[in-house]
Length: 83
Image (cartoon, rainbow, N blue to C red; front, side, top):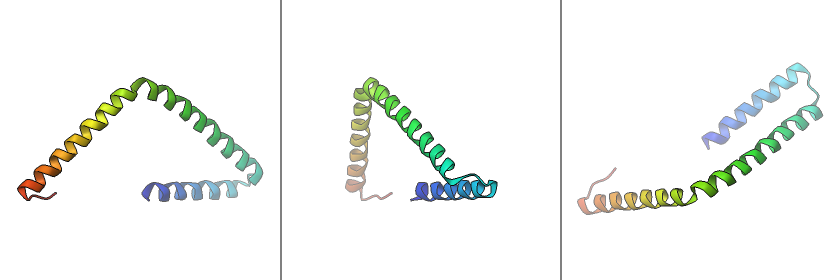
């Protein structure tokens, strides 16, 4: 929720600034859309390469975190403790 709100405020500031500068709406939309598309493609390609390289290690780390969380919750349940 906080991320969405911060992005909305950022977009409001950009729109307000572009309006004050008198930038054409079509040009602004084309530039912002092109930039978003280009960076999304870069992120997808980079994520694919990184994912292929670190997939097994990431799965093991996730498993260890889940086992640790389960152990903490079990310990809290057995001792009657809380967070």
